[in-house]
Length: 116
Length: 110
Image (cartoon, each protein chain N blue to C red):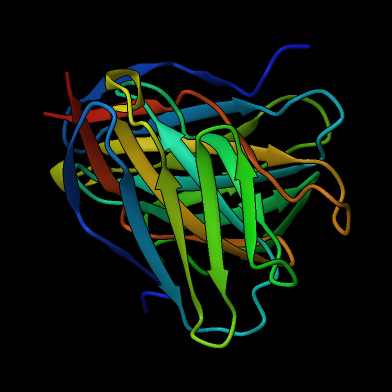
């Protein structure tokens, strides 16, 4: 049973390019969460998605960032026109249905985005 | 706004000592309090968790102490080992909303 799979592990983009980060949740998990971790900082919530629905995007920057979790395929976090300040580690987590005994999230290994 | 405050930012402990990390939360709607352990280059991994109807939970060398009235909880690592050196995050959860503390970088010296 594979864990949460994120790819790529490392991504280098020039300023102004687009970055696409992919996340495949654990088998049986229908909830996906994206977090951003800046150097020496904690995990900042970005967005919570279920299949074909964005449930909570209160942590997403209003511009250039978008996320989707299509019916088929992985969840995608898309950053358009990247700037140096977007350099960070982006983690995806997944969980099964809500209202269960174990609320723990399972995290992927992250994508480390570097904008040059 | 920071809903979960964690301290200290960094901690150095000698092998065999006790590591203590503290967290405080603001929102009484949180109903689950996990701790995550993160090694460099890896994603956070669930270490231990507690619900607010319990004052203490112990798993091996790891213990969570929970004070509901003070809205505080802490992680104790007994007999700390160099392999415990990692960043530890406390978190508070309610209805698919998980908020993390800023993290504590623990170094256990041999």
